[in-house]
Length: 299
Image 1 (cartoon, rainbow, N blue to C red):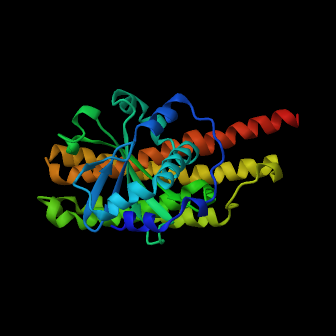
Image 2: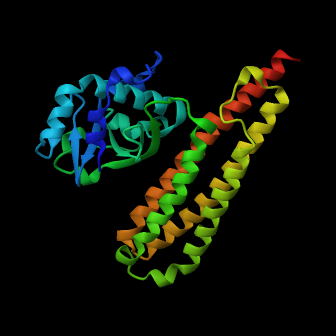
Image 3: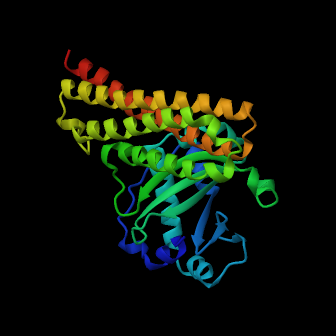
């Protein structure tokens, strides 16, 4: 983990400025209550919304970051919230739990070998009163990605999600020998899910190659909108098929008391659920609305 070291190298003045965005009360409150979890070496440090180090005792690098880089950390949090509002539905679909927890959201950053540019972020919520005493009870919200130097995401961020799902499944399989009691009993499930993951990955990337990386709605015809919508819907169908297989596997693992392993499957299913919701609400939902509006203007 090298998030703290990489952030220390950045100057907020060198980052592209964020455009002003009107956020609703859910996102505004989440921004005010956003905790950061940043790593250095093998240690994760938990920073409060005001950048106090809650745990563990800070080292020199963490102290240097919160002392010299408050402007950068403010920019980072604003960037995270705007990205969530634009390219995900994580906050919306988990709003009940977030609101119950006083809008506390924890963002755990993982730098992606990009010299501090790109991060994968895992999001959690937790009761403020028990954050330190029962940290392990945090609720997983989902994961997303940011590039601090390029807010606009090609293919609406879908390509990153698809690649991530394949990598996550590979990591899930690596846990089998140490987390499962009887892995031989589930060979058929592992095989079926592997085939679905590979199909999702291969077919989705082929579909995306034929789509515009950045959609300029002002230059698209109604026919273009309908075709793009149909292609993204096809990707969503692959996701739904994979989700159903993973959900069936999860139910079996729970009935067989594979407690140490099933939580990883549940987390994987949550990522699939989030992406399906993103398609339904933001991608296909947004494109469908534009198609209806386009027809209205040209009728």
